[in-house]
Length: 288
Length: 297
Image 1: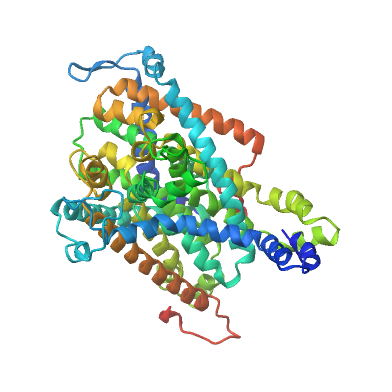
Image 2: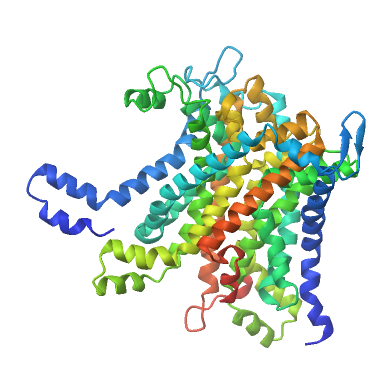
């Protein structure tokens, strides 16, 4: 291979790599720098090494941080419980309905995120039939509401990120060699055993990817809490948003963003340790 | 999963037991049906409420106040809604063109070449996907603040291209991986230059993947709220408009425009799928099967 030919991939990568470096990696550095500055918006911010921004930004906001992880975790779990059976049916049972079902799964993407969430506000509104049914079933107290509760925020998060859970699981189930499942049956494993010993382990990379793709954006989300939530349901995203765009306290806002990122990273690393795969890197696909 | 079949055979005694058996056998399918319904309910609500009369000011009040066709005949009556939609369409078009071109080149490099720095490049592409939108938005804002850049259409364009690139790379890459390179070799054997081969063989076969990626980038851009909210300045995109209106009162026309957007996207996707199938049919042509001239692809 000549030298010039060896340079081709780098030329192809150049525009994208520059764009991502300049507008994804470099901004992270500046957010870090901003997080260490002192001063106020009106007097201007001076560069410095104000580590106390981190502790300041956390004080009074620990509730929101914990809430973000609880809501996102619950939503991820519910999404997994809905997504797996659905993905299973689409991948292995749907036959000629497959394309149509897949289409239904990604259909929410074709409407604006905010309008979808506002639609949920309509569905869960105080006088809506859904709430009447829930009240009738005693799941919600007679005079209780659904809107403005943590339940509504979790419902919104679950709905909005569900396709991100379904698609990777579907992809891993789709690729499964069904003769392995047959083999399990031939060896007298029960349906449950076959599922637990064969299907589930093979689709683990899909589950890992789905959980991450749902959990990470859900932790940082503030749209659902803003539209469906109430006073006691704000998440860490709401705080960051307000610090940046309303209070213009950039140093604390940046510090809090970093703390949230660090917390997410910690959770994800522990999770990957336990679930353990490199499925998220797309390496497996390229090796083929 | 198949456990129901044995019980079902035993359970043909009474109608009730038969029904129970049927339910057990089809539990998975019933669950899937309900889940799909769940996915579609908000969309049905949007379509339904595009016919909602709204309150006295013509704004959504979250209960169905009466059926009307006026929202559709006056779909473009609210200027602020139209302006924001036009901004969104412009932004989505420009950022789609840029991110699709950039992302396709990256995908070509990643699939077709072995080179030093490949893992790092993969990481650079995956990381934005694994970062919460709010962090991407906040980090970009930090950059723009530091350099005192005016927020507006340009900063939105920068942001939208940035977050679309990764998705484009992933979609085009999956198409490239399934690519039969012997077709390209055949073209080369027949005396085509690399550029001619690319133009007449590679690009047409890759087109469905590129179009799918572009469609995804467009959808992501037109839908984006969080990152835009941080970097828009005074420019108002459609989602930003809705968020602002959410506090004051949302004009009923918003649901009409959302329904239109939905319909257009669905039609576009169908066209892509149809085109994809056609391309796949042509790509799978072998000499022993019917021979189609490549130019027609």
